[in-house]
Amino acid sequence: MSEERASVESLKRGIVEAHLRFVKRNATPMALLRIALNPSDGSAQRMVEAIALLQEQTDFPALLRCDDGTLLTFVKQLPLHQCVQTVKNIQDRLLNECETAISCGALTMIDEEDDYERLTSRLERYMRRAEAIGGGKICYGTARYDFCTEGGEEEIFANFFEAHDRVSLYNFYNGMPLSEEVKVLSYRGGVLKIKTSLARAAFLKNEPFTFLKHPMLPDTIKADIVSAAPNRAEVVLTNLRFIDKSPVDRENIRVMPDEKIEVTIECADEEAFSGTIHSLAVNSIAVKVDDPGVADLCFGTENRHAVLAFDLPEREKRTVPIRLSAVLRGKNEDQLIFSIYPNHFMKQKIESYIALQQTRLITIMQKMVLNFYQG
Image (cartoon, rainbow, N blue to C red):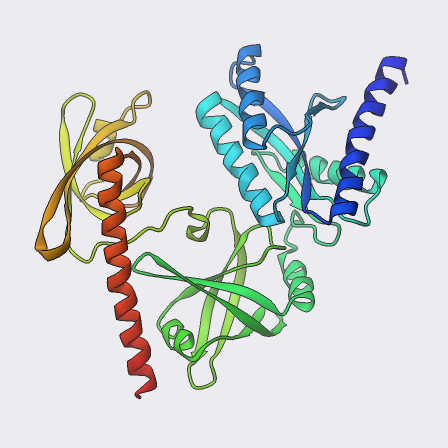
């Protein structure tokens, strides 16, 4: 090993070991992240932009360059599932804002029992596996759980539910999130039995699936509901699987209107078409259209901007006109998904509408619970 290379290795080892000591002394969560960046045009400027975004989104931790050109850094004071979500958000932003892909990556939580060799060898194993899988795969795990096993989710779930008897259960009622901590009764052969409240069991009786989360799980689990017994407050779940994108991870509450709200989508070329609001949050909106193909005529590969206009209901059957800038983020069957950018006044009106819908939905849920207990 050359003197320069030995010096670089000493620098890397010293910084990693300093973080190891910090985790052991303070019992605070921290992850080690390694990624391979691939700018679309290979330019130095793209790489500069990508590294700047990476530093900003991870709160400016130490950033090291490995011998193979990959980057090594840290994600601080977040549990595993939030670390994974942070890295996935960074991956999306790098691609959309810097035209730079993460070709592969590895993420592992630093364990209090780790030493330098154990930690870096685990990260190296994840990196090689992600590289072999390709397609921007990021492999992640902990000293105990390897979440990048091929077809190994069953073993992961079995080990996890053996070690943890509590998990958070999530569902949505007309877009409003409902969460509750539930007790794990058993997990055998891919079948999970949980204990919940009587009212929640009654609600789940008519639901096809539910979501599960836990600080030691990197992703949300989606599970199909086999049966729900309100009299025993027990629910049986099967077909458990990790999902990369989940409504549970949304930062803002999304509601579905209980009335038809027509919206006009004005394209950059001054053409326009209409649809109806499927769901609404303060930073995004889903619009249902009769012919999704019409969006192809409105939005080209270079321009995905539009102006959305609609009348938002208020109390006492009043409405307020809303007009705001939007960017098309994707399509989902007959829906167009937009990020929206309301000014202060319009944001307040949207927040008021969401609060109004929440109050209405909570009243409905209370009536459902009351009807259940009254027989």
